[in-house]
Length: 493
Image (tube, rainbow, N blue to C red):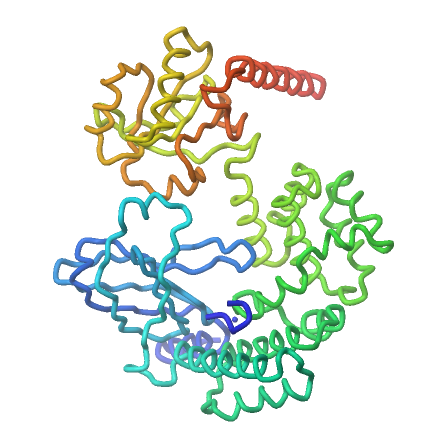
């Protein structure tokens, strides 16, 4: 839970085992965690414990899966090297806790509530978050301590800002922090101490300490990076938002655009960042800031994407920091989805005969891909227009429509009514697919090239008065680019 104001030489077998256990307990070796419970209303469901792979992209990773037995029993097993925020998606709920190394948990799931169909299809649907109550098995667990701290913190912060009407200073905030500390129980745990420390830093930053360079130097350049502490990373993201772009516009950073755009060089970009006093010699912090800057660039079209991806690929392949390689990979994966020139996610869906069909099986031709719904006026009109073009013959184009409805039978009825002749695939309750393709309205159209890469995003709908002209131009441009690449390869050989 985030703090208020914004909404880590020989020996016998027995001795050897003890030695290994000692190392595991003291040197951050991964230790297994068991999570059990009973929830009859989820019988037959496969549940997943997830975590964020990083706090820049918030990419979710699956730590463990478990099928709920018919009697309601379930059991997860996974390993961690350090405490981590983990969660389970439960239809309309999202259950959260902070898993600790070597601990086992008995959790109680809320009674199952199934999403309404419109909620399943709503990309903006927000789950109701809750924290698991772990106090029954261990009153001093990390989750309970953080929740207790957040409650005190939020209450005190609201009181201070309302009482002083926003006119606060260092003395008032220090007194407020002392009040919070006085109500905390004695709990010595590194993740919690860091969580608390950076919550207080966030408090001071919001209230009075606005010198970003001073905070960056004292609290980030001179300390270890806490990649998996939620408050540390929240503070990092706030302090270094837009940093790379601002620096590139400055006198010291005048060489940064050339290092990124012309040279496409990670090492040269990092060398330019060395001119920033707070980062001189701090290779890990420099590279993390560079990754963040490249991510922001892709989201906001700051530097050319091909140059930005080149830098990220170098970090992904060559960074000496394992966390940085993972984050760079996540940024690349996230930002290349449905980006012009990049391959779309493949999928397998049933056709009208209920036989599985893979999107990639349509390669060698352009694919005009659409996502449609039944009983949708806009979809019906666009499909009628598309049918006119299809009946006249769309050259070099395969038409594929993903039907987001109740079942295959409903899809077949929809097709038969108008005698549509192209390929229809049933989405088969694959809601993650709709997220992958960012389907936020119906109908949605894409044009893919014969290699499965995005050519037009979004593609023009059939009702566009220049539908055929725009398609032909897009196809011709692709063909010209392919010939250019072939000629380059021929010269290179």
